[in-house]
Image (cartoon, rainbow, N blue to C red):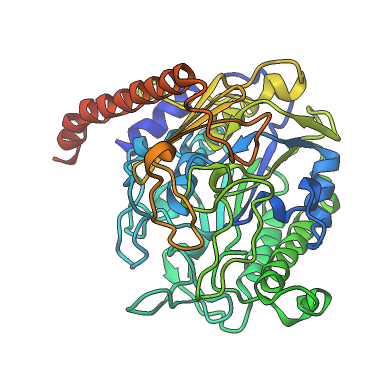
Length: 461
């Protein structure tokens, strides 16, 4: 079925309506657990991120951009497919297990890499995958010509061992072959690979997905980054060193685009998969989610409101800010629009192209955004945000559920971006209307998945 859909994509690709001559290159730079309060252009003052900040000055910075989920795997699946995590076959209550041989995102999904390959693009995924490690769900089975990185949720940056739970194992691969690069920091390794990929494909369109494993646990950064943050508390110092290292590497990639003369015709997108985690005994807790409430794994703003920057000098203005509602599922249709590719029409997409309002700041973005994870539900519409069954007091227990009055929490994000005051009693009609919209959205997903099961069963025979 995957091959048939790829053929369909190639046949359905539209003649260029956006690009003239060579279509744009795509570079996706993805951080792991980076909070919106950890980036200079979003107000951070104690961590140096000059290269991310430079991207914002030369491109467009988002102020209402959301991850599609508050956790690594579902958020990545949504970004790569343009579809809500539940549509991609991911559990709504857990991450994909990190043991080798674990299935992940449904193989029927069409990724952004497969879409780009239908237009003749070379594709690469470098760094963290975390969307399955069976042959069909590894990056080479999901549209990426080249994969160099790890399948699990996290590995030690120098030994490339998975130590988060037993059994421990080594997890560094080039395509489907295990490789050894002991002693080389993973951030440096994948940045080197990115530069080599750019050199090898400078003459044809490419899609490069660079998924850094930082500042996610384990907190292992090169020593040269620690001295400048010596005055910070230990957890913040470690976080700052990891973030600074990633920012330096992003600068190496963008500088190499300049060297190759590719900057003007390359779309560069930077963001993070979810908010920073709360404090833990394993050393987490140094990240900042800015003024927003709570952390990774929560559908309050701290778990899903992300930094995001996009740059395309040939087509988009520089040094601007966009306040429209945007979400990670939008990246797929935006790139499809930019490279004049037609996604298959046999499925529902939750994203919308950004190009109209990136060009014209007055054009509208999403009217409403929906989120669901681990029996939490959230809806954002205009200034209103409702969260049902959200977390409370994560510093004590990140699985602690909101109860009583706060089991349904309504906030006016314009007046209260930190979601401190529950307005449910003052505006019960708003909360009820938003939750009904969410229930209808969930029903539509359940109906789509139920209708697709017989077809998938028949295909497997």
